[in-house]
Image (cartoon, rainbow, N blue to C red; front, side, top):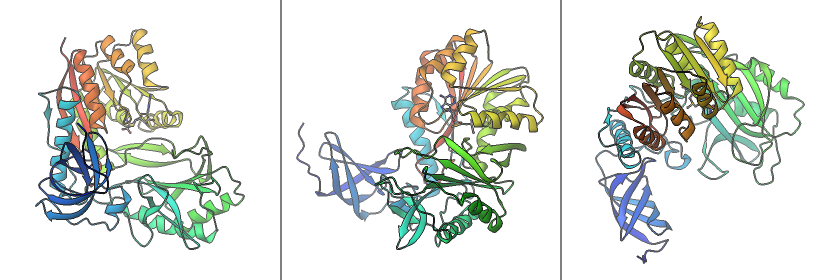
Length: 458
Ligand SMILES: C[S@@+](CC[C@H](N)C(=O)[O-])C[C@H]1O[C@@H](n2cnc3c(N)ncnc32)[C@H](O)[C@@H]1O
């Protein structure tokens, strides 16, 4: 059906739903209309800014009738910076919303009707939980500023320094202000995305929550920087909690953050942290969960669902620096980790050593190659733990699980849609999903982490 709705039109809309990314949804004529910032139960005035065949997007102009679950965002940048999609929604309502996002993905995408999805595990203090910040650079007059770009642009929507990010650890926030000063003191040039000139592309700061150790990664273009080591030395002199300054060189024109070349400018090439009583080294290019409080909870749930007796052979697929492998190794006979980033595998090996574990081994490569190879050579795991990136597991990984008739699978996921897809595929291979536990790793954002437990029934 042709619709008469035009971009630019102002409409009144009853909001009846909330998408996984936090946009309110209403119906206008034959279109689903997505309105960022609107909540279910609200009557709003909105201006259509994109009209497609079956849906439209609109900008919220006015809330005519307000939902009782609406709260005032605590952050002045909430509307612009794109980092928090749910700061206008009461925290307990967010937890309920995330549970329903998971339930709906399981039903719609996985075609799984009767799976128990437990209430989302929330945080007691859901602020300043992040151990990592990824900063972009902009200019105000002659002064370089650090902050976050508005989504899809190269313009700073949130400027940090005077203001702090409410999701990030407070010491990281303090360091951001100090870094801005040091960058200006040394007249470093920001990278200009339009003509690809200039030096500094991004800055990543990481902190070990238990140790307080900090790492600063300067992602730069390939431009020469003769004073790089003096700059790093000065940074560590001003901020002794920074134990590692790394320069990563990214010469690509694309938006991805890290390049391939990396060198330590000062200190170590890793920081240390402690999770669930175990010690971990974390290198600049290794993955590490961003919310340590909720990560401990997530790993406890993983262990609980794993139900280990000490006799099992366990695969930790997509193992990163071996956090799950190290945690499960004390409860299993043997744990085999697989990971594609070589630095993370080195961290994982070192981490097992420093935790006194002798029953772990780690392999570098894509799980979709390594797991089928090991199964073809006769490996018979009792449990496979999957913790893939957002895109989920390659088909070959799930086929290898079926091939080896693995009795139990625990799936950790940061994307309910790909989790639902993969659980649906595993259901077709004879795996019943027994329980899904959402964990609120990313309060005030639309994201949710889950851990699910499957058992082979055929
Ligand atoms: C969500 S992280 C999980 C890491 C770890 N389990 C943890 O909790 O910290 C996913 C990991 O998979 C790795 N990875 C991505 N694609 C991969 C692939 N095809 N094969 C192996 N590892 C991969 C990433 O480098 C990252 O370390």
